[in-house]
Image 1 (cartoon, rainbow, N blue to C red):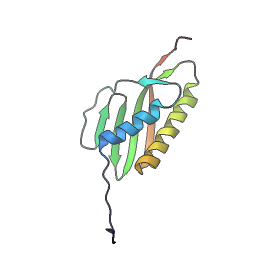
Image 2 (image 1 turned 90 degrees about the vertical axis):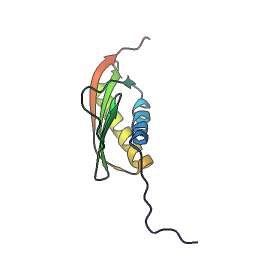
Image 3 (image 1 turned 90 degrees about the horizontal axis):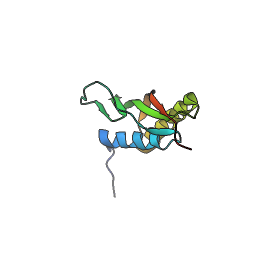
Length: 112
């Protein structure tokens, strides 16, 4: 049996956003996604609540708008989110990451 020499896989922007969303929300200390303010969704610039993506030359740049747990070290938590989202994009989607930008929109203090 022979296989084609060139195989093309297309990932829908919605699927890429789902991967980003699940990776970010899976990090302990991320309370929820915040609203993305301004901007217009375009063909290669998509966004939804808490996520804005840009895809150029098979590289993904992500802006995440987050509400974080105020009882945690926000800098460390942000780095952890960046690492987990980058790993998810690279391992699950197979795309390179050109940048992950964390925007802390608010903090919450969960009830004890």
